[in-house]
Image (tube, rainbow, N blue to C red; front, side):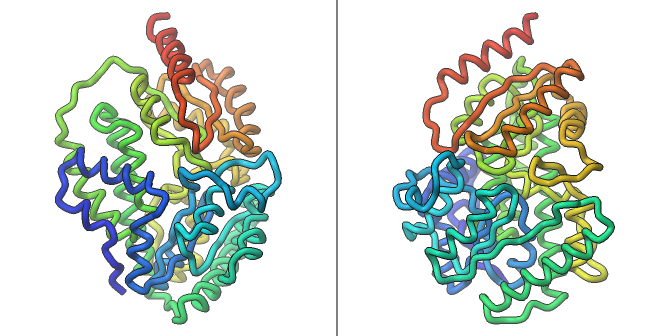
Length: 389
């Protein structure tokens, strides 16, 4: 099934206008690409952060829509939640309550108490199915892959009910192939960030990646292929900046202007922003049982995150590896305000960085923050201390 083209206005643009168009799409709270998709009569399956097996929704002909909050005030959703919750929960519900985005199904995950309860909150306000995908709590269990394969089969059955058609194994294999291509292109983008970070600023790379959650991966891959060719040939001067890893963007996303502010002082050579889009690190095999292959890839070919507990991937050790592999000189360790997993990990991360003698800058963010002057001054002071110490 050929997916609709919903971002055709970006086709043929040179690099700077293309990147500007990606930023405009990300900051538009009306989600025009999702609206165009629905206008073609195709269903939309919304899913919350961090990781979701989008291949299952894609194989059904639906658009897997990554719900990562929005630059809106939670006027309607505030009354549906208690106090002291992260912003992304409220703004994700807000865009649905306001009609800015229309879904046919919603899926969340028990990555924290608030996210687990999000299915119930959606379910009390909408008639469409609202489900929880229970990813394995113990990724080291010998039965984890078998269990997860069963969860994916359950999810697939619910998706089939929503779209009104059966998804065959070959449909899943085709979708896995599409996503393998997309993930490989994202790896190429991050390779450029590591090897020649002066060719692509962190906010530009982020916008180019994040729009993949607003369109089909086929269309996104075409966009990435064009952009990567232009980035490689981009003539930009290398500046005297330190190389940093940004850690803390696994769920709620920092404002683009915050990422841009960091880019004015540093080269961000690696990060965990929207890590769910890059969670699987290698191609998923096409031969055999596609659901089992997706389950195996989630467990065995994957990155790390505060919301997955895997003893083989101690998060503080994985951060140190990320810093070493990218040739970074320092780390920016952040967390979204009111994010319990992120704030807890700041303690272990900073302790590990102290032990390894790696300089770091600690901060918090909120998706709708608009003032960055104070943070930028602090960051510039941190950078100058490293460069001229």
